[in-house]
Length: 358
Image 1 (cartoon, one colour):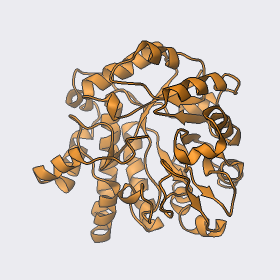
Image 2 (spheres, rainbow, N blue to C red):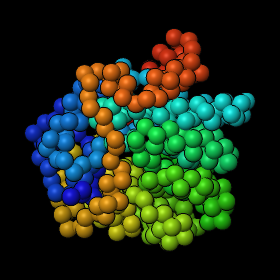
Image 3 (cartoon, rainbow, N blue to C red):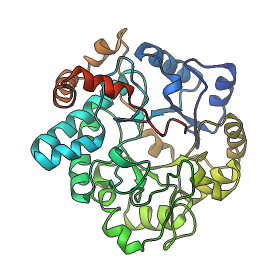
Image 4 (tube, helix red, strand yellow):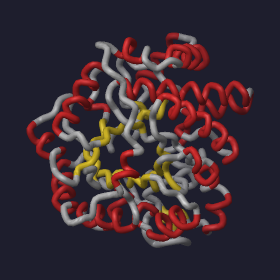
């Protein structure tokens, strides 16, 4: 049975404490961070070990491209999605083709090392947000919709489910919800007609959504991830979305309004989330696992849709990725378009992700 919690682990191999946590009944997922990664072979061995101890578990990662990429050493660099938006302004046709290639390439290499899903794509608008920026495809909802649709077509072709984040949009406010409370004071109509459009227009391609830790004060006094108005009335009832709802990391500052971690997990699940993420706080993870024992299990069929098409490991990343028929071409296209110069590739490798502290 898949449980309601997704937690993280300490390092590049499982410790006895990690094993104890992931074997708990309500732990249904593990998310990997940069500290869990040295190279492709190590990540695959780690994922195989996680599944040895818990077969009913989803393994996720944030592999968006640009500065948000946990898998780096030996993996093909991916551009920030904002670079696709820049290309779209100059050559929409080429940008849409490259978006497909980026989605396929990302998914193939993530699946190859045993990870089910990358939490992608970001459907937020590029606005004044301190944490979104070039993680967004574009400022215009129509451009985001077009590029994200192609990116998700690539993901699905490789065998990976899609997760749109951060519903209904994080890009219009400056504060970073990882480290502070974030409040958006716009009306519901303003949000629906702007930031929410990329989500609404791509629902047919989305398998999951991740709500923002943002309080939309004209709609509810709770962050979207704790709000029945957003999760049930709007997502389930109005938009008719039946996919998975992942909470964003409940250790983030934007989630603390709900109380301690036990209260946050219960609030997220009660509001309508299927799986609650608790990251980078081992004490909190243990508390959450204990609190979750009293919660109902999520819809199992819904969760199973997020399992990735994991290929047989062939000893190294390249050989394993050869099992994806379009991987070689996608890799060539992305590299030639965005990383022609060796310096560009080095910059992509060394760029830092401000969310690494999550």
